Length: 171
Image (cartoon, rainbow, N blue to C red; front, side, top):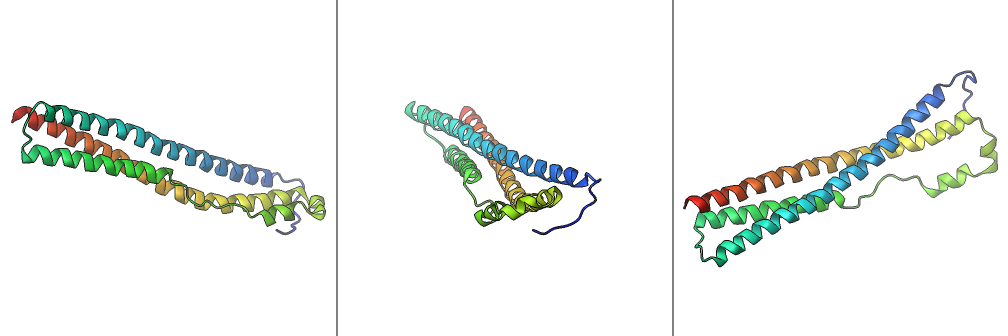
C-alpha cells in the first residue's frame, strides 16, 4: 500500500473503485444464490426420493412381484437421486474464501494513514477487493457446475422413475 500522486482533477479512481466494489458485491450475492440453489436441490430431491420410495413400497405391499428390470430401474432411480442429494450438500459445503487479514485493518487504522490522499485509500481498498474477487469467483463457478450436475441428476432420476412406472404398467 503505497502513495501515488494522482491527478486531483481526475475521478477515474472513483470509477475504478466503485466498479471493483460492485464486482465483489456481485460475487458475494452469486455465492448466496448458488448456495440457495444447492439447498433447493436437496429439498426437491428429498421430495422425489420420498415419492419413489412410497410408490415402490405401495406397489410391493400390493404383492406385485418386481421383475429384475423393474428392480434395477428402482435401484437406478434411488442411486441417481442420492447422487443429486450429494451434489446439493457439496454446494452448501463451507469453503475457505479469501479474506483480508486483520493486520491489514490494523494498518489502515494507523493515524498516519488517515492523512494520506483519498485516492491512495481508494486504491488500497480496491487492491484488497480484487484479491477477494478472484478466489470467490472461481469457487462460485465450481459450485455452479455442481448445481448444474445436481439438476441433471434430478432429471435422470425422474426419467428412471418414469421408466419404472411404464415398465410396471406394461408388464
